[in-house]
Amino acid sequence: MHHSDMSMLNTRAKRKNGCKADVNNVLLLLLGCAVQGEQRGKFIERIKRMENELQTALLNQIKKVAEEGDCVLNIQALELISEDHQKAVILAHLESIMKERDMYANRLYEMSGERESDENSTTTGSSSVSSEVIRTTKVSESRCEDRIPSPSAMERHANVELASAKAELRKLRNMIHIRRDVVT
Image (cartoon, rainbow, N blue to C red; front, side, top):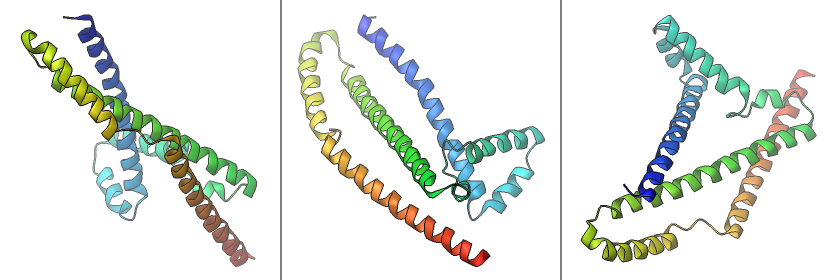
């Protein structure tokens, strides 16, 4: 086995652990959405029919998603703080989401490159030189097709997200003012 093959296997092993964590995060988000959505009663009833240990484990995971705030922005908690602090919390949350999005985009890009490399590495020793030329050509072609957006495109996207967040913030402020008027 060549050194490059061994390093590729090591990289794959590291990514498998990262993939497990990613799948776990997605499942936690789905679980949180299920019990906080319109049909939460159905999900809660199904959970109640499960074994006690499983119920406890699911409850702990639901609390983790709903209360820790890493995955979800708690709108009710925002109502309790000043408007300036609300803006800071929302912007920090958006920044973390954008960083996470960029991290996943890079990971997907790397994985697609690995997959292509795996597809092209199934050659025999006699044809390895010609396959290397083909592989290099395919990789350079795929880089043009799968190119990550330029910084200006990312900036435009960030500006759109910022505008959306500002609109959401205005909407939340209006809701707060309406609720304050109703209370008084």
